[in-house]
Length: 232
Length: 267
Image 1 (cartoon, rainbow over the protein chains, first blue to last red):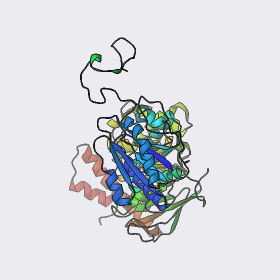
Image 2: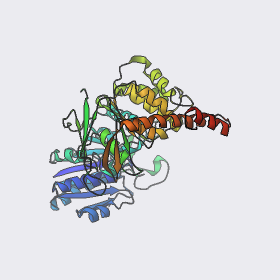
Image 3: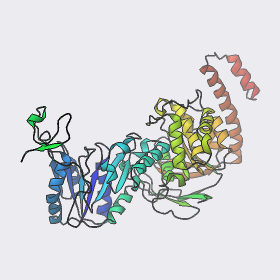
């Protein structure tokens, strides 16, 4: 089975890109499964189940960090997709954290960025971009060609990965993504996160709101000290 | 790659029927117009050319260069991209100063004209605008006309692209007569999407769009070329009135009469 992990800032067009990719992969008679991870609301799973009749699942990370959630549920998700006889599991992440990245070894990691999001975005989003296998630029019909070229250059200044420029709404160039997925290897254990992000659940993540180190445990620091650990 | 000719192999219109024009070629030096009502697919056609459509756009059109099919992902490397497209978008999103943006774009396009590239581009742009574009202005501060003027200049000087696509240049708030005059000095393929009879008749031929499809090819006839000369005079007259109203002058009947007389329209 192949695993596609799709990241990118909210509203960058991940769902629209995936919709076109799913259409292309289904035309090649691939069996697909789709997992959506989001924080508190998502309805893409229902849309995809209805439009494409593929097995879907949805996870709300809620009080948990979405990237942490991603890491802990991925094991089960892969088992589920294998039971569904999927050739390709597509995972759409919440796309929030700019410090972590959801990609795992052997997966096809794609980051979706909108051409309208400002020239310096590629420098701001860290591992979500530089650990991806391909960057998909969306909404290219909304910017001038000159700006589009500068945006592309700014991506490649951060990382030399292939850039696919798309107008996903009209299906322009999305076929190129499907072709790359077809050429991706199958996943094989051990499945490890590609990066070394600070995925962890801290006491603040789980909802302890009190200010001050006295109220927390785990990795702490004072204003002046380095990090230290308190706990079991 | 030296481009001598590009060919569009027709695809399908909006309702799924095959295009009437099944194939059309532009040779180096050709001036082509794309005409048709709003929503007839003119912009989509220039986008197909810009993206080197290869059965991967809604129209399913295919492009050939010098009669050969294109390799996958052709045109990805900006410095090798032979096309410059000036869209109808008259807003920049980048808040970089104008000169920084031009420098960056010249670097990406590997423009080889040294340190004067910014000055040359601005000089070209400022021949087309009412108010000049200032080197240090933020791109986002430019007006619609200034933005278009800068994009035309960028396409010609920095892009130095052999194929230039201009989407409704007449709506740009720039001096289109001057623009066409300046552009004529360059040996390129020019494709104008236009509603303007002056531009359409100045072309070697025009593609008529309807319902998302290329409906007809019309080669500009000798008779049309003669009519074009008259349209040019009338257009200049209107432009003259426009310029004078702009600077706060008043217009008289007598003046109109005199002008029409001098053009030979009143006996």
